[in-house]
Image 1 (cartoon, rainbow, N blue to C red):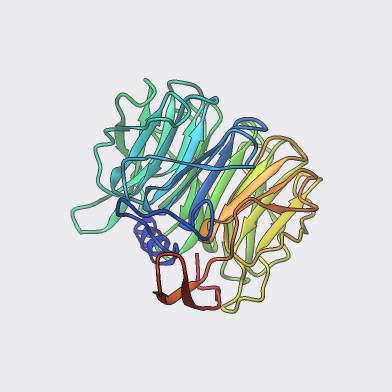
Image 2 (cartoon, helix red, strand yellow):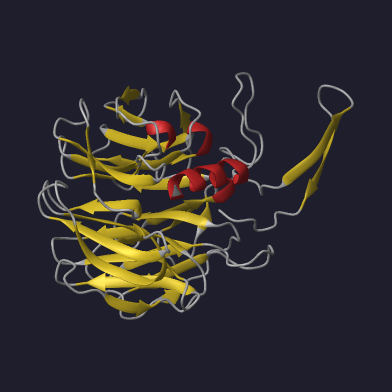
Length: 370
């Protein structure tokens, strides 16, 4: 249910969608659909996915981005690459895509479900995991766990057996993994498996809120982020014992945290929303250099909601978000450079007097959700 709601929000708030052939983005560039996930395999090769089946690829660290044909107009929620050639993307309507040539071509894999798929995680070329959903006999949406042992040629669907709404998963090997989301209430929830998703145990429930992202460095050390509705703050939880205990860390912000990423046991980042219905509040970017004991806000120079963060070392990283926004840092997040050109806005009217000369009328880019 949550992913279905998110898919609708992403579609409505993504800006302009050029689904028909013959149209090209002129502003912003490289395009203006909302970007939901970003992943880099090295300093040069990276991918973004988003609404309207958007897939972007760079081979020069983001200096230029090229659109890749996904073959779908469904919203894509996640992307993951094992190396610079082999990767997968998941999305709404049961979409799973795979490429073996860096995204030059994408092939649809059969998921066996028609609901949204998110929370993509691969531990090697063969073993992959994702989260889906299904309608039970009472019409409620309950979570499904998807697992492949052959690189996605076939995917097994298993009912998790809970009513939690799950949106992010992290596996450290073919057996051990975690999934996060919320209960029906909603309350933050963290599930754990040690048998490749055959069975799950609840490691944490509460406080009121939702967890949007989970990241583990190894079988012991991990973080989960989201929103704590009981305190109206960004939620950050950390474990050093594989999830047997989860400690609450102070985010210092009153905004949802949508994504978390660590490059080692000390250096990590979390990104989130602008936290206001006006356009003046800057996006949320938090950084820690002590494993999460303290988090410091970094200025990023945009008011667009940020949905995903990816770093390849303690200095070089990227974020992406609403309106096709992509930003890059080479100094650990102290300064950021936009890799997308042109501010997005809601256009109300356009008029051309000839083939070259035209005008448009726009509204300011108010913060309106994701």
